[in-house]
Amino acid sequence: MPIATPEVYNEMLDRAKAGKFAYPAINVTSSQTLHAALRGFAEAESDGIIQISTGGAEFLGGQYSKDMVTGAVALAEFAHIVAAKYDITVALHTDHCPKDKLDGYVRPLLDISAERVKAGQNPLFQSHMWDGSAETLADNLAIGQELLAKAVAAKIILEVEITPTGGEEDGVTHEINDELYTTVDDAIRTAEALGLGEKGRYLLAASFGNVHGVYKPGNVVLRPELLKDLQAGVAEKFGKASPFDFVFHGGSGSTAEEIATALENGVVKMNLDTDTQYAFTRPVADHMFKNYDGVLKVDGEVGKKSTYDPRTWGKLAEAGMATRVAEACAALRSTGTKLK
Image 1 (tube, one colour):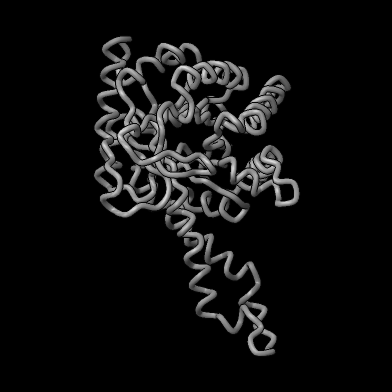
Image 2 (cartoon, rainbow, N blue to C red; image 1 turned 90 degrees about the vertical axis):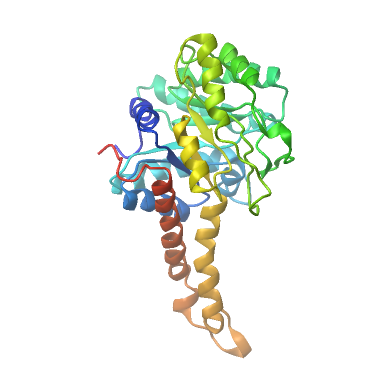
């Protein structure tokens, strides 16, 4: 059972919360990066989460049609087949989806999984993300209520982002400023609208200074201790200890101390994209520089087929990204925690 059933996915998240570790959530854009993520998890003996953003899904759909649903479904179906060869369990997730892309991405995917569940099958994906951080909190939560109900019907967990993550991801941009910190009032309003499990399980992407993309030290001030305040504030009002399952966005480049604090305060999932993109591309660049006259037909020569064969540099890319995924498992304390 390499692709988690709804029951197993819930068990994975419960184990992470209780054990104060988190699963790396690795963005993939191809069969190669999918295998790299799976390999990294397997080498670390860790379960994990594979995710596809709207831009990743569009890329997977092919540049002729750029259809996000086609791309996401195709890779998910592929993952259900190839993941069987890896001795770990993974969940499939879709990353940031803003309001203007819901009808072309998350809503159709929810419908596909709902039909599968009606037919006695498991959903195609195990969770989907609604990114309403560009909307008012009231509108964000209203849409979240609608999507949570659809997710429950499809046996899927919803992820919601209630306040902005800085930087840019697939066209959604937020400035790096004081708005990047969720307040206790924001968290209470979320609990009032979406419940604390009785309306369906959801993951909460709260903001504590998170920024997507590449940034130099000092440009970003992360305050993962803020998550403790959010847990405590909602627990006091609703009487449920540690009520939220948090997601750490903008995880690339974070320090060991920042990650450790986040884990202690309820983070069960941390997204990685920028770091794994670089880890995938860096060995390719190295190969191209070292084999310049082999990958190119220089000065009328014929080059060297074995160096420009995509399998040659593709294997190096897979190994580089897999190593970075395994490092993420160690940082998030998920190494050696696989279910099987």
